Amino acid sequence: MKKIFVLISILLMSVQSFSLKIEKGKVVDNSGNKIVLKKYSKIVLIDPAVVEIFYMIGGEKNIVGIAHTMNQDIWPVEKTKKIPSVGTLYKPSIEKIISYKPDLVIINPMASNFGGTLEEREIPFLINNGNNFEGILENIQIYGELVGEKKKANLVTAKYKEKLKTVKKKLGENPLKYKGAFLFSSSPMMGFNSKSLPGQIFKILGIENIADNLKGERPIISPEYLISQNPDILLGAMGIKDKQDILDSNPFVTKTTAGKKNNIAIVESSRILRPTPRIIDTVEDLYKELSSWN
Image 1 (cartoon, rainbow, N blue to C red):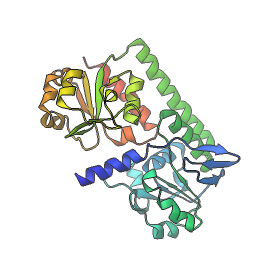
Image 2 (cartoon, rainbow, N blue to C red):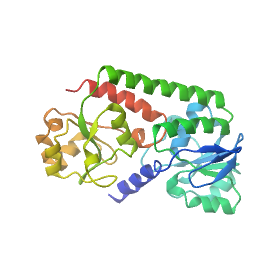
Image 3 (cartoon, helix red, strand yellow):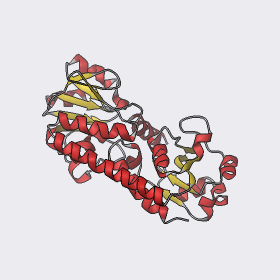
Image 4 (cartoon, one colour):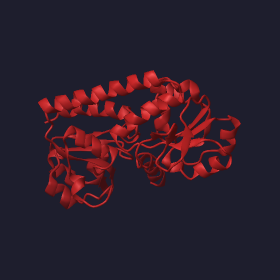
């Protein structure tokens, strides 16, 4: 259980800030850290989201080391597993980082305190931000400039904007009309509200989120509340590995429309909580799957 909640913290901390921005020839993160807007050739990435983005825009040649995760793979797995490690997201090694003589380090908010260690050694760094779809796409373009792949970054951004536009068009023609919850855990049953990336996925898909009627970012959904709301669908993530976990931990699920129709599915956590364009692929995939439910 402890490992699960450490993983939860790591994933969720990566989506709690807004996007990067450019001011007077510098890139600025949400904490006020600044670097010169230019191409960097030896970059250490302590954030799996940025690793994925770099591979999407052709910036992998600029990576000299990454922080590996404990339980979640980093896409594309067959390539990222070969990149030298500088420790973990939760505990990066300054000694290993220094050994690669980076001209830039990009870190996850979970490791934001590590920024002080980098600052002491005069190593330029940014904290990766992005807690909404617009911010994620804006970050791609900035990272494109930092790795000298502005054109590819623009193409990737355009591609995913079009994907999102297409899904919204399909929703206009064939709305889902569901009510449901994206579950953070099954015991106790907790849901993501609309401020989270999973919650924003629900918003785009036009799904009424029952967690929004409760207090807290990840409120507990009691059996009584679950039955009163009678969700049409339930999607599980994080430590929920199988939809049977949801049924076993809360027998009241079988009294809901979701339980009766078996409208329950598990979604890989990195695809809904890691702020990369792949989250838009998830929106597309979920629309296809949920459209076939009844």
